[in-house]
Length: 289
Image (cartoon, rainbow, N blue to C red; front, side):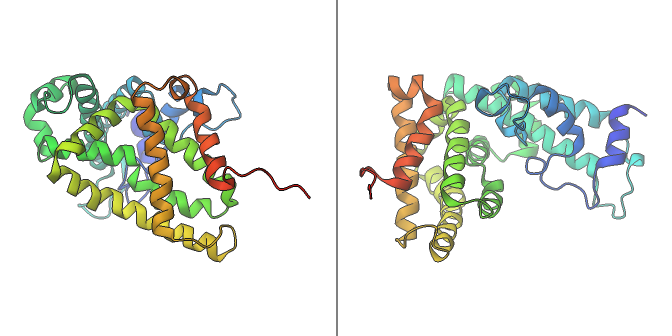
């Protein structure tokens, strides 16, 4: 049995992992420990590596999914105690790794050629799979783009982020949250550009995006703002409008960067801290006793 398979048998929990990108198992964690850059380019070994595949450099992500698929292809079901035939950890990891591999390929193709001029055949070629394999995972090209949007939005981890953030004071959480989100989107700005341009002209896709991605995310943030206000960490305000004002500010800064603004382009790591300070403290001068 290969070392990778021994790791599967020893570490995959039961019930099996049902969301590959939310909670990495130790197989992929071992890969990330040796391949993942520290947050914001830090080389400080005390800084924890990012906790999932989403923040990896796009070329590292490609190798990451290939690494998981290679391990899975060498593993048999016998290494796992599966009480229910429908629960197959090896298959689940393989499916999610293949799906991630296709999404990485689609991300590269869409960023290079634009969404409209790209084809699923080109995505398949970039992923090293047949075109038919793509349709085993995604209904069509629009579904591929929506999955990329979902990844950019980090939809699956949003509720968890806000819940965990309640253990931190609001200014600290807000600053770190904006820093991470803006860093992630800026690192994927070419994909963000493609997504934004397509949303502006594709009404059906825009409606799906608003209903399935934006609105659920807004609701989570609104509830968090209300709870923070109840606990006295924020001033009482209109939570729905406050969330949209924050979102608009973040998107506005990112769009300015896409347009070529030199200040944002040359100092992307500082923008989130400045924006967080403005949103938390306002533009007024400090009150002196």
